[in-house]
Image 1: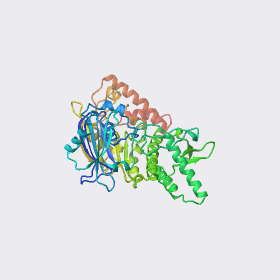
Image 2: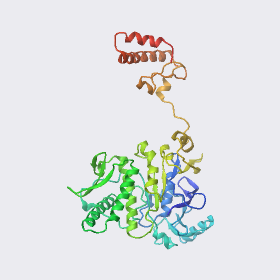
Image 3: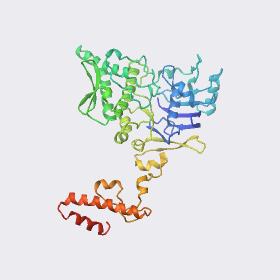
Image 4: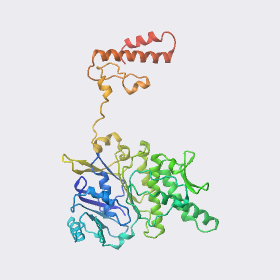
Length: 452
């Protein structure tokens, strides 16, 4: 169920936004699609606009907060969705809740000129007819879920607190509230328990084993650790634990990066499994995954490997993520980058879309983040030295190295202080490396000698 196109009007910093998620030949592109841009350019707003158009009554979309991003009845959005082998359809949403809102929204969709059947129409309000279905197929769609970086996983002191989801779409678009800690732990405990019981009774247990294997394999890929795995402790209480670096940790003992990553991964795969079990959709491996600020809490090494690992673990899922990290953007070949920028009026626009193609992170800094050069350190500029002098305030001093500088002339007092600092430093270096009483004389000669 990948997206092919999004058009939004009068939402957040956008007056009008048109983003193509297709491959340019009329077919959807699974991505990953990466939203990049400066703060305030609308990356998170764009993700929430997609979720708004695809939301339903129990999806948990934060409507009350979303109202603050709308500019009135003219705020609206539509997404063009491709669902399996069926014909593509359109979901649309509007802030207009007056009588006849659905007809006005449908007229706006038709004016855009996309030749597809309309699926769902949404109105932001408390009307009994706030959602109108035009296409029955949209009710049988693969899972879609939206996540923000939250540490939702935590230890539960009793199995009685674990509870399953009523349906796979429950609270799936809440972003900060999407990860269901109690449901995830119930899902894991049930999988291990049912597999053990079925195996003991001689019944078929391959389906449980296959689901566990898929989750464990995805966990190893995404966390970039071949030894990581989830197990269930039998005592003192029945609880899932993570075997990580030779330790068995409950969910409250995990680091922030591991906890957030496992949270959205387990939640999404749980919804896929429940979707398959209820026979709602035949292609349970499909779906849409929206990830806001995917790089938060992650070390640059994980930022570099996360998207390629997700592409291997979930090859049929369309991934749309926002990020400020050049490591994330440059990590996945054939990723589509959608750069958002602000004009002089503060209005956001789509700057360009390009392929990441595993470029160097520094090369992407200027193009995607409007970053030109690294700022000068205040301490270095205040103690700047003339060309050819030794600079005692460079980071390389920790390795005992001396470097040439090309900076503005400094005052005589600063030069004298710099020479004294280097004299003391050089004495320590020579004494530590050679020893003996002649270390001081050698240091003086080195200072008087030619510059390297």
